[in-house]
Image 1 (cartoon, rainbow, N blue to C red):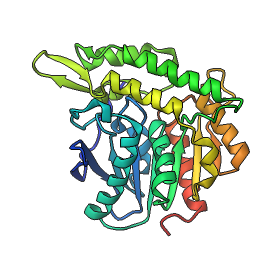
Image 2: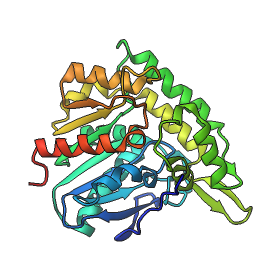
Image 3: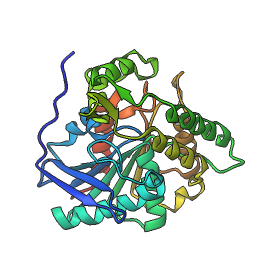
Length: 306
């Protein structure tokens, strides 16, 4: 198994949020192309999605960022700010500063999991600021009374309970990578992704010679709990678009609640939707080529960047 090595960014810009949190933007890809802004799921890091976003790099300018306290960002002092409302404000700042630093051009957002939920809340609370938005398997929780409310809410609360007590320190990234590769639920990731993910979500503690999760377990748990209480599905039709959901396979034997909820959202609101056969929640890392093709086909359909 060959190690995945990321290219050097064309440019790196550190942004300071209103509360002092730092978010690092990295520019990759074709700086002359239309712009894509990408972020990741809870507890993960955008570098680990390289098998997917690398396939878009020849045609598009890529601005990638980790949500606060994730990936390449330093840890912010106030863990109470590690939550979705702050992610929403951060996304707005990222949009503003990206335009300020890199200029104005057609811009689409590509967001997975909790960053996709963030993008939905952002569009509903801040207004539509995109030329297109693609949401990868957003773990939205339907309103109380919906047939899928309880299963979706219970799944988020289960993740909240699990993450708050997860191991935080490791002797090296290889130890965590082995845990990932031995996990049945993560067995579909493309070759090299388990190691890349481990390297992307850990930072070295030189005082102890250990490797520590970039995202504090308490913060990760808090985000899942907040998401369990959000009820954005009923307002989904208020997002003007163009918007597309690329979801996990709702017919897969190992389907989780996002795959079921996203199919139900499509049936209710009729927005563009594709489920990638044979995938679970980490759809971009399981089938990056399929996700990239669906992405570029959608951009062609809506003439994004033309």
